Amino acid sequence: MKTTRYFEEQVLRKRPYIQREWCERAIREPVHREVQPDGRVRYWIFIPELGKYLRVVTLEDGETVHNAFPDRNFREMKR
Image (cartoon, helix red, strand yellow):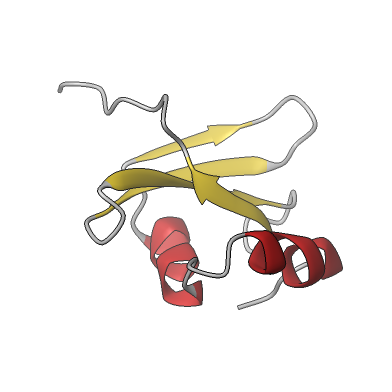
């Protein structure tokens, strides 16, 4: 998994419970995906261990992880 320096030095330090495999799974199997106006891509996945959705933000390439955090406001849309 490719990551930014920010992810390695800031995100994982502030949120050491975040597992890299969760980020990889979010990119591979998101329940929702969205492109931000700046081109970065947001992915959401439900993490049972957290009991919450995890939002993973990648750079424009869609694979370099830049940020990840539990998103308390995300609600999966009913299909």
